[in-house]
Structure formats: C-alpha cells, structure tokens
Image 1 (cartoon, rainbow, N blue to C red):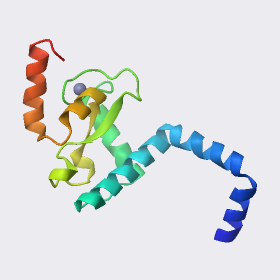
Image 2 (tube, rainbow, N blue to C red):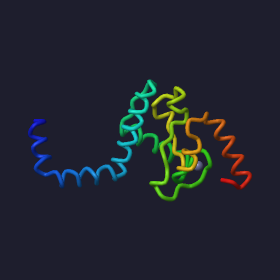
Image 3 (cartoon, rainbow, N blue to C red):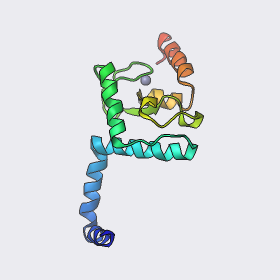
Image 4 (cartoon, helix red, strand yellow):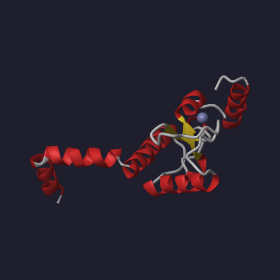
Length: 136
Ligand SMILES: [Zn+2]
C-alpha cells in the first residue's frame, strides 16, 4: 500500500504538490498545521497535551462564543485579515503551559510577538499600559 502510494506520488509529483499546497493554505490545513506545530513544540518542552485539528476548531468556536469577530485576546483589536493572527499558548509551553485547548487563544501578530514567553497577566498589564499611552 505504502509502496503503491509512493509510486503514485512520484509519478504525479506536480499534481500531488499542488493538492498539498492547496490543502495547507486552506483554513482546515492551517488549523492542522497549528496543531502539528504545537505538538512538536510541546514535545520539545516536555509538556503534556496533544492537539488535533478538532481541538483548534473548538478553540475558534469558543472564541466566537465570546467575541463577535476575530479579536486579539490581549489588546482587543479586531483582526480584519484572517491570516493576521496567531494561535497563542496563554501560559507559554516554555514555562510549562499545557498543550491543550483551554490554554489556547487568539492573539494579533504584534501581541503574540511582543508577549513571546511572558506570563499572560504581566503581558496584559504591559499591553494595556501601552494602549493607555497611545503606543499600541
Ligand atoms: Zn493584540
């Protein structure tokens, strides 16, 4: 079976690659990639939890229960372009945060990159201060 698949993929490399590209660029493929990347990072940090595509879907479902639109959890900015956000581990994996749905949230790229592996409460206080000063 695997040999047959390998033979097919080799014979149809271009169309297989195009199908794969189309999948990873789709919303479903993006969520599958988020789960796979999270699992790889969780394993590296030795923290518990394995995410599946359905867990990422559940995280978005919970997000839309709380917010009418895609919204950054930290600065409350509405995320206009779907691709302009990250799925963030609230408690960073590098600090022992678990790789589970309840530890995931939506963050704008600016917040996620600034937060890095900070404690979520410390980061929230900092970003709200930045907003008050008109610097965010
Ligand atoms: Zn933000």
